[in-house]
Length: 455
Image 1 (cartoon, rainbow, N blue to C red):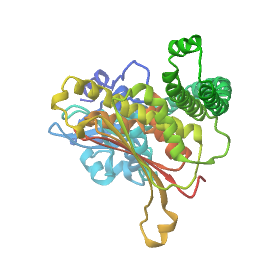
Image 2: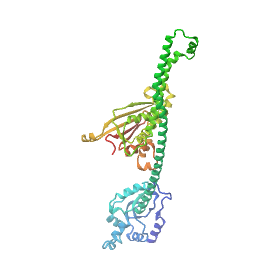
Image 3: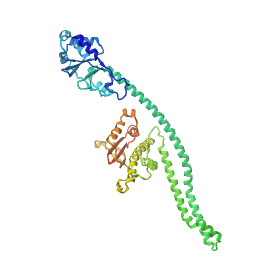
Image 4: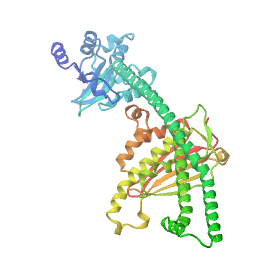
């Protein structure tokens, strides 16, 4: 009987895991699992001899009439046999007797369980159970064992891969930040070069306007004093349309002033957006930041999307201006992308579109208080910035993907612009970043920044 039993064990002693490299998403089914199941009525002597012959065998799966019943580890069985008189009393008994004495909590996991999650659950067990093997459940009535040593080794391999990925991403981020810093300095230099002639034009416009008005007044005075004007002068006045020139000159100078003012604001907004943050945060007017970003995205919306500002009274907020500008740009870009398709659709259905349904982005700022108790009220003041659009909203699947991208593991795999914004607000500014989306009712991005400053 023992020889037959041993042959059965040799035929299906261990199930090899997957031959692919382990990754962050690897599960227990990719590891080597021990398949050793016997009936509860099996003699303890035969199992002990197999344990002696196969030192890597972690334990035995107990079944009763083909149904899973439990597990006895090698360590637990040997502990009972080496007790005083244990060998004389239990060696000739069956496994059901040993199990009735050696019953311990068994960690049973699905084969779809991630390796890192399984390792966390293993470490949460009592210290005396840390060496106990795990039971892995796959198909119905198929239970196999996993050595803790194998799980620990696989976990360390995955942690090493994760550390390497983090290192590579950190290096890539450092290089990217360096490139963006150089680009920011370049753009800031170009903007400065543009701003110099703009300031020159802006500073001289008032003088040109005054000079032109004085010259027109002088010409009119000459015209009043000279009663007999020669035909050549009259003909020249008709050729240059003097009456029209007199009226249009003021309008032309006003248009030049408006254009120069717009160009000046655009260049200043570009300089603010390319601002290179220093080591410590500085007080900033958030409304100026928002206006700068809105001015920069005007070239994309082309008047198809209305921007509604509901600005409250905000004190200066300590923040990293460059990073905060990036957050606002990411959110506005997300909102504009959602609304542009809607604007195109409305162009084809103008007669069916109501005024209230026009594509719109609403920006609201205010100071709020969030406190669990009255004593915490003064210490829980926040600056709230809400950017809301009236698009069709995001699907549940997209919302789930965005929320998952906020986790550390997902950021290692892929870092989206919204995930970057979440990290800047929460990690760098100690704030909160909330997203609310209702299908058919639009999206709302809420940023909460602590009013007390950054610690």
